[in-house]
Amino acid sequence: MKIVMITETFLPSTDGVVTRLKEAIKYLRKQNHEVVVIAPDLGVYQYEGAIVEGVKATTMPFYRYRPFALPQRKVKEILQKHNPDLVHVVNPALVGATGVYYAEKLGYPLLASYHTHVPKYLDFYKIYKPLKPIFWSYFRKLHNKASLNLCTSEAIQKELVAKDFFNVHVWKRGVDIEKYHPSKYSEAMRERLSNGQKDKKLLLFVGRLAIEKEIHKLKPLLEQRDDVCLAIVGDGPAGEELKRVFKGTNTLFTGFFHGEELAEAFASADALVFPSVTETLGLVILESMASGLPVIAAKSGPTMEQIEDGKTGLLFENENTQSIVDAVDQLGNPETFKQLKENAREEAEKFSWTRPSQQLLDFYQQTLQLNDVEIIAMDKSV
Image (cartoon, rainbow, N blue to C red; front, side, top):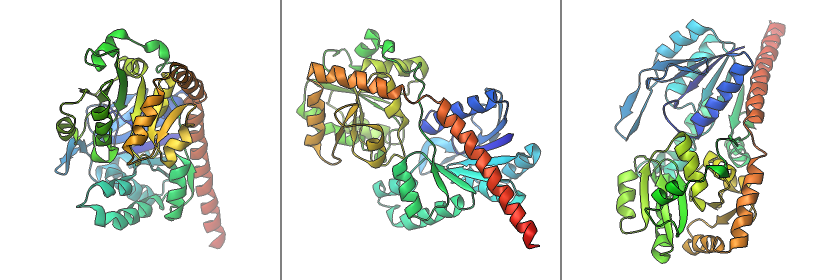
């Protein structure tokens, strides 16, 4: 099978979407399927035997953190050049919208996947919030041109179905349980992340620094507890503002970590903090658990699907500072802390990337079958 994936983000960017696509591509290539990726041109033109076709990327005035590929006719030329059996548009919004349009126009079977909860993000940007219904309508229109749609959690599946998205399925989560492992603990990394205060409780945040991640909600905890320090790993449009917000607290901003450095960071902290309620999943949760690192997360549909409160992690109520403080307090009990770490790792071991990658291949087969059924039905009606 020849598959063209059209994505708004790919290497060298680092996020949950890119991680999932990398694992899927590796699996598909091992099964001898051809894969072509159409993505913003950021200098990567091959991955694990898959061709990466870069399209012109532009820095947007409202989001200067990274470039995006706008809708463009070149997508049509690439599709015609490779003539795939199936097109998978990942997070259709800009260049992905072009992918949806040309896949339909050229008659290629189309599958789409929903990874970024953009309409929900608008709640955090007052100037754009009134546009929320328009955004929902836009994304629904794009996704409903696909024969089959994927999302990454049951909670988001329910929300999309309620918004009249068509034929929505859950693409299961996975984690590299060898890369992320408790054995990656590093005394030097702990010293670095804690800014030399390695005997304090070391909390870790990993992700894009943006308003909707609600990282600012961790500040009251640091103001109340002088035995806690926070390491914020990542970067993004709210980076400078967050540095001002956390000034004077035991907080270290590291910028991005990759590879072994990131694995060491997970394994060397005491807990991952996950304050966002806008995520469609949050792969860092499973990466943390695989590292034997308990997760302290704000309650939301996707976090409650992944974390059993008091067993594999700790959940707190969004907007409730005392709830976060109480969760951190539980880490002070050595037996509780030890059990949380062991349970987290044990849970993560159930989720290798093989199953979701095989599942994606099954979804591709279903998409082809759905299109065959439609063609037969059309033939009969003639």
